[in-house]
Image (cartoon, rainbow, N blue to C red; front, top):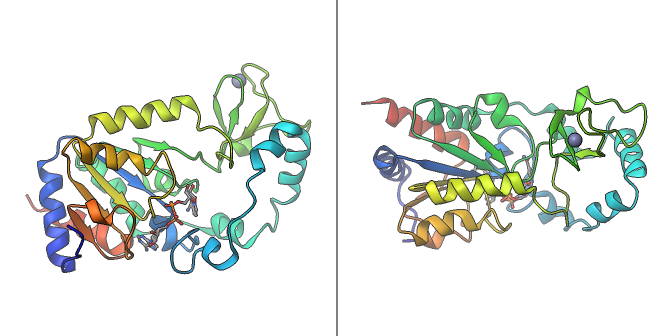
Length: 259
Ligand code: NAD
Ligand code: ZN
């Protein structure tokens, strides 16, 4: 089905599906954080919609000269772009808290997020895989350990791993950089366990993330979409809540609180 139904009916049907599910997995995207003031890339008002897509040489630049990359990153941390300033200021919105609540209520087993903003962690989600990394962390290129960015020693660049001496990089997955294998493994494991996908605030055009709900759907499991705009998944969604995440996810929690 592809025609959105009324908000109340859609949320009721979504709640019903979640009640029946034993291992619901969510895929979240930039739209979940839009109400925290972080612009999306695509969709109305998105950074790329307004300014075009950026160049895609981040990973090459890092590999060629990690020291120069870190110098540049540290210089631009203070007063950076409009986008990073929004990320610095952002706090979780009701949608993030409601996602965490779904997990605490036992209705959501895992979240795969494409967001790098750390807001779902701050809001209390615990079973979460950040497929594009986390901007608040650094990752060792050799052993894969992650460290909070504000605890790494940047007096000598590039910074190195406390455990193995490998070069550290910001955990955010750059254009052209392979998604870390541990992260990808968890995503596929969760996708194979999923008996429902809740897709919130993603245009679902970035692969492999967009593929996870499609894989579950192919195995016959339902797909719920929460997004004010149509996406590439809308045609195969069983329930579509055409509303902002900050309204739809709390409404879902409220219904599920009633036994
Ligand atoms: P996207 O920018 O491609 O799409 C955003 C989607 O969110 C659109 O479909 C839009 O209709 C929807 N949306 C807008 N407002 C919404 C709201 N209030 N509630 C629910 N949905 C809403 O984002 P994407 O699909 O996540 O993919 C973009 C890539 O950009 C991701 O890989 C991510 O790493 C990165 N990104 C991250 C952030 C962040 O961390 N907050 C922000 C922008 C982009
Ligand atoms: Zn290491």
